[in-house]
Length: 490
Picture (cartoon, helix red, strand yellow):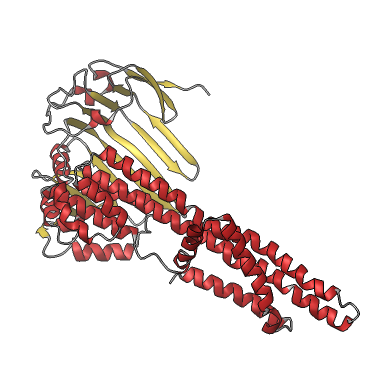
């Protein structure tokens, strides 16, 4: 039962009836069968004249959805799609054929059936989007039935009032009955206005919301099935599908977070000695997914806890136990440092844990993000502690060659607080194969010989080039300087 809809009806009717009784009236004064017959019968007839009978009948069948909560949760659909993605990734898309009889959602079952039958993702989208468009066009008429009823009812109520006044005006000689007759005649107006504003129009509004939610769920389902067919990583798929819901991220509960860490991470079974704890791979996987657990375990994630200038956490990844990420916690400050100089093995381990191959890329530098709380205000500072450098190339190509993509920033700091944002960047250089292009970064202009980076330039590679070129240390050491910062005119 939808508590909002039920409570709204009770509150609206209760307020009106209570007001009537407080004014000295009684319910018998507004209970007029002939007025109800005129208003509700006339409104129904007008609606049936405007809309085809199947649409009207479907609208009344959908009336229950206004007062009942949806049976299907979009989060359950997402978890089912993630499960399908994991199974398809492990056993192939054809293995999902055995799961189709248990799928109750007709749209999901039809989409999965096309996917299992070998339909190309692009063709699958065309077929199911056509069904989505046709169904959406038909369902748009359902709330229009009640919107039209909300427009007809007040007018028909006036007609009922006039019809009630006609016999009254014919007996003006009996003045003691005129007042009573006028009061009875206006009951039809009450029925028309009240039914429109307390029933028809609110029902139409709530029905629009319900129908739109169902449309979003079907769009999400289609995108999920097509992504499974394209071989998308299950974890990335889950993040992608959650974006359809547009839900605000839940507020962090510090007590719940501490309890979770103490019960799942910082336990005796995970303790490795010297402040070092193993991160259970089960935390990143759904219950019972052994394949996911084995995959995440390859990252060999660990947390090292140390006391120093605040409570310090160091995230370790890979067989060499590199520590690319460190966090320092104070009572009023959180500092997170990303060290790219020692991130080779960690990058490979992270890529494997995500089910991808490591990119042919090298990185260098150090970046620190600091969040400080003071007097109910927050200040975010992003600092480049050591010159940042990044390069990526196709498999087998040199990261310092002309076909590679390279980017370097000597130094800089970005500060954001309640007064605004302050940006101070050092020399920026970039190398992108292509034509000239000019962009704006942080209040400065940057002229780049290149083009926007496409997905094909950033695709994952099986091999990694270990060459650390001097281009990562200073902007002037690029093999060919192709970008420089220029001040923007006011």
